[in-house]
View 1 (cartoon, one colour):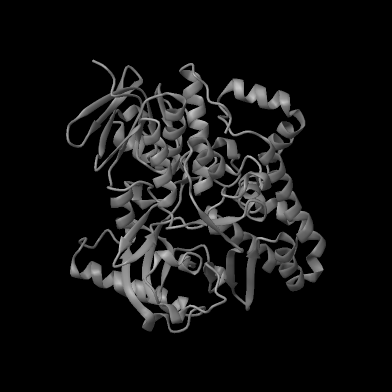
View 2 (cartoon, one colour):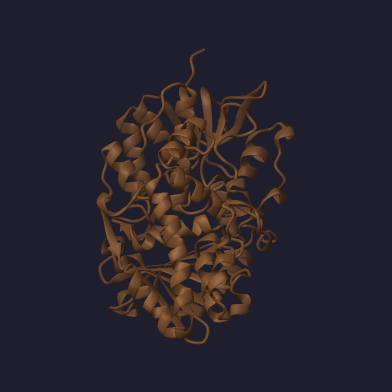
Length: 503
């Protein structure tokens, strides 16, 4: 019986869609199955009562003009290759931090302006500040000069290593470095080191000591080169454009189709079975699910099971999607904010508030005279599992917890409680249900001291089953999972004899 496609992709997260788009453009037939009626996973948008809300991600790298950035400028390069367009709006500030002891730090696109804020607060650490952030610049300079590809592809490794021997060796050495330990080589002030911790925690959900320097070099340096750019119409513009590219070259995306099982025979992936009972076969399968969902739920053979303890499990989120009166947002308000009440609790469940108001940049996502607010804190499914979903006790607990987060947020937006027009609340159980993610988790993290290359790559223990997304190298974040999709597509294409050109 003929295969349904050359490659089947499980889930329409950004990593899987990127892999599908690049393979389809290269001539492989792809079929992507998505449980929901819209693409993107955590990088999606939904509309409610005239507002467009970002389901999760809202800080986006990789969209600058090609001449101003290196190979980390992946979205621009991919969309150019696919012949699709995603208009964006540049953001002058990555994140505005509101920290204990009246310590406020806007992280400006202009690197010198950002460093000046830190140096004015810590004049005695000027040389250390310059030296530490220069280390991140050096990592960025190396990464931006090297083409994206699979670290498991010997042809890619040999080609890149031969063309760039010095940079390749320097990068290999930096993979053994920790962001926090590097900072401590140059800096002694504890408050400044706490800021560097929250710089890491803002995207890695780990302190700086546990965060690889290579990952930090991407997120904390590229913001001053490629910068942060918001897609017009919301986060969903990114997956929508990838879907457009897939269809443009003949690929298929099936929404409302939940994959029940990845079919494995004699140690080799053969296709998938949907919850409807339909079976679809292929030469290869790419999973965009978490490592635990893939090997403990979608693959039924217990020999492939992955213990939760093999990696640290990132937390889930409690999220608030608010439509508010425009008057509550000051004219000089930045889009992205992080609030820390106490340093002792910033990394505890709910300790840090993440906050964005994308309508400050893009008025199209809110009705006239209104703004969109997205606030969220870390949370765990276990805290909600005793409630009956949809029951009165569950709804009451959601409202009470949401109200507490809103009151804390009034530190930067006085009067927010009284300005709310629309309120949608989502617990970790919501994330687990809609995103098909184990315990609603943000994905696996490395234990402190582990090398970044110990992150799972694109190959798996099952032949012809490959992985993309935040369970794979380099990790969490939209630009990181985009890289994973490129690397996965590159490996699959070379294995089947039709290698990709470098993006």
